[in-house]
Length: 141
Image (cartoon, rainbow, N blue to C red):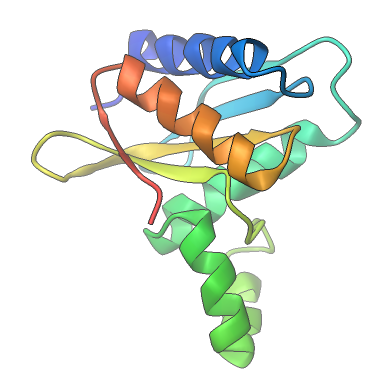
């Protein structure tokens, strides 16, 4: 089970990772395995709609059971399937890196983290740092 303490560690560490690496202001959203928001933080100076983008990265990951990086490749490889699948989940998918699945040591899905604010690769790195700090396993694809 993903706890509030886990989610707070993930958000705090992801933001600290961004600061330590001179990233633009980030927004971090942590969802549990059913897609409920457990924690969300947006840094001062973050661009408008970063929450929605971070949430879409995490929600897409939870909905498909795939990291957003993989979903992005799927959108390229199978555009018709992707278009239909996005409709099925209410459009809540942002198919670029930065949505990382959270797993326990046995591989069970606990939730996902979405980060938005810098480049997609940097967003993904911040998410992975947060998950590791919580003692959980990051699945970025």
